[in-house]
Length: 379
Image (cartoon, rainbow, N blue to C red; front, side, top):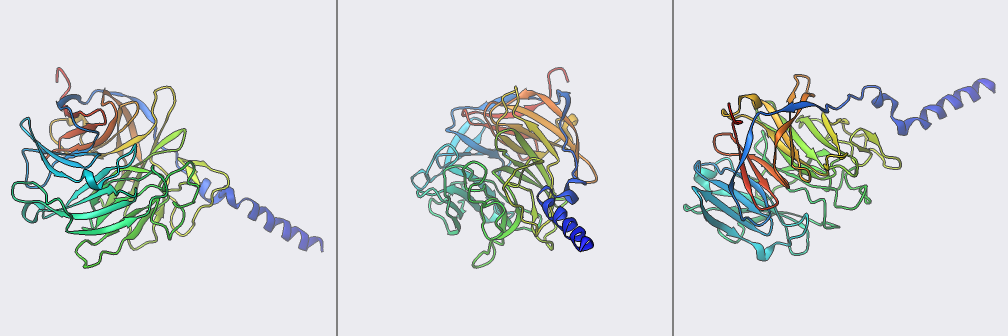
């Protein structure tokens, strides 16, 4: 009887420790944090007067221009100071603090085929993704060719937004958990729910079928694919204390990997929130706190591949919406990150970090300005 009781107590001890996940905690890596300062570039304003720009970048086959998304529902082209509205779907878009026209992706053959995809909040506040067609003069037909996805949004925030084509040529969409503090509907850890996920679809299919690629996201505000390495970098907005950067190898033959929310915020365990254990738990590679610098919401960026800023070569750049702070880090061969440096330059109300046709850095500010990175003074 005594031996049986000992066995039962041992079993209960292991069961009681399951929430603490000792086998996971033992190998938990420490995310990289700021280690110093850098002055790899300055920023200069190249355009102003936009209405809440949330994306800036280059369109394939249009090397002399920048394209800008305005949150209320417009796509605008800038070339040598001249501004042209290419599309205005503001009548189809519900705009709020985190609602509106949020993402754009160009089909790889856009230069010849003119196909592009947009993500916005429809008039019911739900996520809409649709295909559009651009004309030879770059203007875009005002009605979509087809709608590819509708996702009901329970609240006004945490809509995610990014669209991008991945290394497998599928269209990817990052979706937040549906809003509310601490994911009250447990959407991000529900494998049957598209909210709180990175999802993808083959847009060449007659009826595209969206599949979950990553789970456990709170509000992925901008992700970027390293096509050569087959991995994705994600800036995931945190709850109250910490913002995180994730770097994830895409292993599409494996179950969807789990970035942890809302069982974890950064690396901190949140009591009472279950973790779906069907996929590998992936820890953030870098974090920063809200702290005294006023940071509040991460804006994910990209790995710099241009030629004007040698100090930034192959460094991942990201920033904070509230503080305007910019950081860069170096990815390590083992899939982690190191050497986090705070840049001297700042971009207020940073909503997007993109690149022009030469791979040079451009930035969108919610205040209505577009910036570009230039070599630092004296270099």
